Image (cartoon, rainbow, N blue to C red; front, side):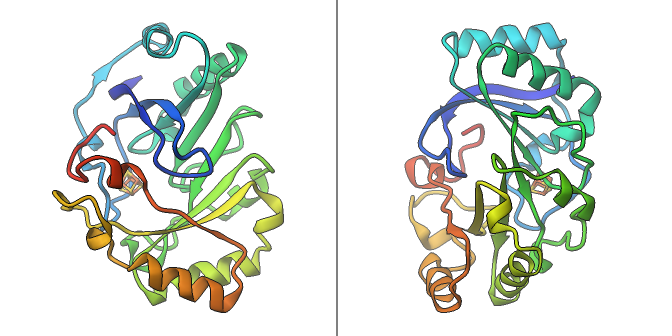
Length: 227
Ligand code: SF4
């Protein structure tokens, strides 16, 4: 498979935030989100066999733990990614798959926690979520909306309500978008939407979702890649 990087860091998002995690970041994405902070994955990388990826993961986390398969869009390499995730599950790892939700998810092995984006209107990629993927979600999965303004928020709020998402998954995440050129200060000044404002909207509407901040952007310089 084509791999941009494999590294160990602190998981910054989802209900697993704060835990040590090995990230397997695959190369390539078919979307172009306006606030994407992973553009360096769009090309390049290097070919690795399944065995080479597994060996590197096991070196970084020899006693089990959390592994996130991410990108780019990892499901573009479904033929190799599915066996990788199944092997890691068999070895006792907790496996997360971070995906845009645009690719089919039917073949993701049971037991993998899918962290699935639904792109909001101002992402630059609205309407790309594959609606059939709603049928693939289970109680271990999480659905994420990256929100940059009130229009995005209302889209996310109404999507969650229309599809009665909350009882079907482990968590629904509302995350304020970060400016993609953010760097320097480790604070909320880089958020395209003030988290406090988002929290107030969620409270006013009793939204069945969790406010989610990318904590790695508050631990490290937001400009640093590979975290
Ligand atoms: S789907 Fe993810 S990697 Fe692809 S452009 Fe959007 S944010 Fe970037």
